[in-house]
Length: 336
Ligand SMILES: [Zn+2]
Image (cartoon, rainbow, N blue to C red; front, top):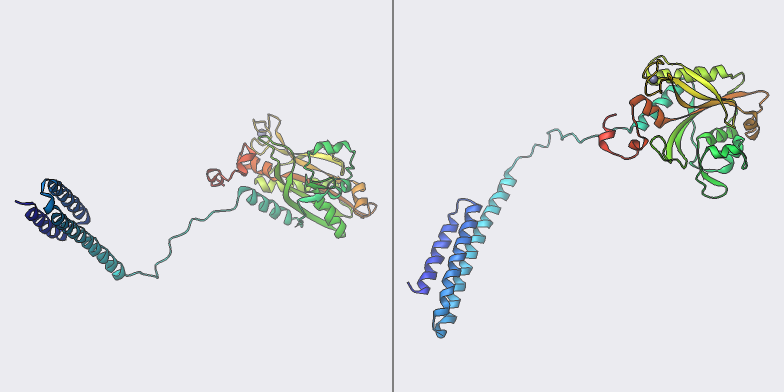
């Protein structure tokens, strides 16, 4: 068979075979097969006399074009069929949508809302204040002047000589007393900042602080509020113990210990065998603070307390590293 007849045969066979292909995969295989047959036939062209080569080259290109056209035609047919099927499909717009995955409140938010709820049942309302505070609201008004050694108890981020990141929520007490006459019952939850960093301390953490100012408020009222809070929060009857301690803005002041919620007070690893765990500080408002806030300390008395919400959540859920709260790891967050 001469080359021309061979190219004719390949062209005829290829176009017929591809048009009849059973699937896209078959069509691709046939396309590849005839392409390689054409390539083989073309190699023979080198043996032709030079005068015949241009005409034969044209013949070969015609066969090549026919092969590509047949293949493209087959693919085009498939596309059209798919589009037609797509258009013919009936969409039921009344079907209910697939549910989107929903998140939930962060553990610390849950704990904060719960704490606020418990205190609100006792008549406390939420008060708020800036996290970037003046030195005066954060320290001076709370009877902690510049040279006072108590400033060493709180490693402070200073933004300037007069401006700090608040180290406790207590400036909210000051702001409230300056703008509101007694009786006052507030809780102030919010972020505070200290230069601490270890498994139980973070440079940013969350406190909730309470303040009650009225005529005839006593230490007994403070203890009653704290006992009510821990019992409701841990959902079992727990008591608290107040250990004398020093905070400049209260007199007397106390560390607040709670009966261990894990062992009930008999002693376990969490409470290091003592039956008690420390949860915060509290005390009777120092008359000096009242003087800064223009409240008559002859007429009014008050108590204040503060605790860390991270710590409360740690105690209730057995979280052993404060960093878990802030890393945003879904495996941790999903557990609560
Ligand atoms: Zn214990």
